[in-house]
Length: 600
Image (tube, rainbow, N blue to C red; front, side):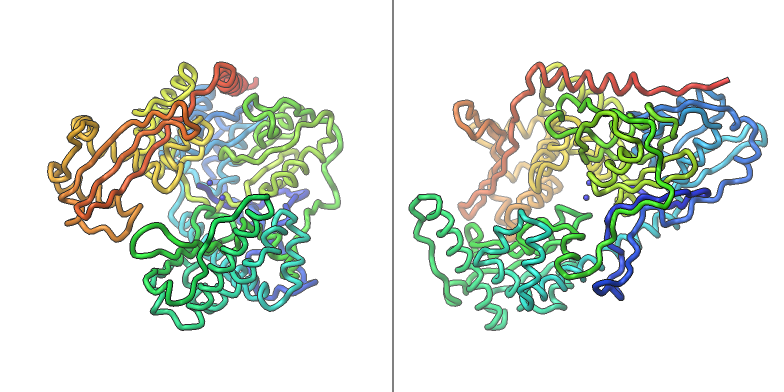
């Protein structure tokens, strides 16, 4: 946490601003020991090719102020203005850097972009007429995967250590409560220590395997007796906690069962790593599932989202501090950024808007990766430059800034380990914005189209900035797959499924039946094809206009054993006129603020 590359230490670094981030390695960590914070600028910058140095055309000075353009658009504009053909590989079009360069040679723009991302220039043509294409080489992508694997393994080790210490040392929960006050409720609950005891009971090796994505499923009766009783104690503690909470609110609690090992003989226990926050600290999920019916309990450990720095503090490991060199940035000029985006005004300014203010109101050149990050900064007026830069890093807690002469380079902390996504087609994006502007909501057909995009496009972060588009692409475990089933079935079969007679599964060809089976197994993983083939498919629109639940399209499959699998896609309320106008006006303002000029 949600596509990038990590490289670069500048040639003339005067100062480095690093956020309080933990070191990648746990080896040698002990209270009081020196720890080097991981920095997105640890990697060397790619070497500048001699052809770029010698090409006199690249000495043209340009003004580049861009924030809302992707890499393809930026280079197309630069090419049109300067006469030098510059492009980016199709795989890199989804990159959207923020660039505020006041008067720099075109050569500098090219090397700053390649240096920030760690990409390389592929050069073709003859001397005096070279053509340049930005690309990512294989070794660079391989290194990203290696570092991601290493960082995740080290975070897993950190969670295992935290779990053991939580059980063994009463001071660990207390220290965590100091660093994260919102977690105090969980830390003091009767079941919290039972969580930790249960997890520890399965052993360090088992926990490490599950966290390493080697999910595990077993029957309750196959577990050792002490682990069976650990699950029983945890479920009973959870019920006791729920009853007490309801009672404290002044309500009569329901009669919840008290379990023993015999009661749970028919359940299946499934362990897996929580993949919802791929770049945050890992969590362990445990489901207790009977052979039929809903689950009877779910363990999430830790029972709250956890920050790596907080877990280090709880364990007594050193946490790198926010640091600045001996020669800090000047206080002048004073920067003002006091106009949040209309639709985000209650949360504050986006990082990109603050960097725009710094670039426009100072003589410093600014370059940053911009992945539609959702960090927010409180509006400010006439804040000294050094404080404005520090505010971006400290408030979001995910950015580092490297200062090279009069250039400020900003990097999002997990940029190197994020998988590179691909921007969907421009016509689809424009169609989304057109529908939002005219109706305040995406049509059902457009949501289906988004859900059916290739994975690399469906996960493009920019979809989160288009209302409801992100929901169609990644809303939850079932939403996008359910939307995709509409495309699998096609118009005629959807119409048949909407009729009173419904659609017999037997009318589907083998490929469609297999895809329907895969969809159904998202809800129930024990479904057999033979149980599906004699069933029926039904699609209906549920109008709940007078109900708080809202309207939805429901897809259901009746199986031959009499049970039913169903999932729905909500029909959301359209944005009001003011909201629509605010969104469209902001998008227009971003486009108008982008400028690329050749300076004589």
